[in-house]
Image (cartoon, rainbow, N blue to C red):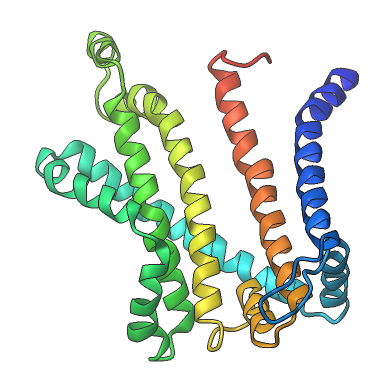
Length: 269
């Protein structure tokens, strides 16, 4: 059992290790050939960025910023999840809403999240509600994906499922729990995963642009590096943001998807 588990972990890990190695190799190659910024600043290498991460951690800058960003990401994502679920349920059950709100959600999903930053800054950040401004940007960037995922999965339920539910006498909560929820769960989870990617990008845009007034965060570290022309600090922030995004996907959403597929017999136990 332990040997099989180790083999599964190894099979899952080696493609990621190879991809990361290729990325670092290309990055180091650009350093070797002497890539510079228009101002003449040499491109820092992977080692420079990793050393800067260590320095920021040692000076007690990185960890508080990381925790602040993760707190914003968690709160904003949960709020977007609640809102997207409620909107999605309302749209799939009310035909009038489907005609109007459905296309609106598709339009909102296609909007770059950065367009909400000036609006949030004007109405919230300038009024002193900086955290609310950040949460607003995250919610607007993420909730359409959750609602659209729920709508799409509901639309793709086979008609046989509804016939089976009626023939078995399913009504009320039992009908939704054992039939509708189960049938829509794969698409809903896919929408949750996509919404996380959008919420993470939205949060970084909000922290970066509202960084001068927001408290500590990874986006503010990136903005500080830009203001000081400190390229190693900038790349350290980018590398940290990338690692966190990959970690959340691999530790939260990937196991969730595998468990769902395994329970449906689409993956070996």
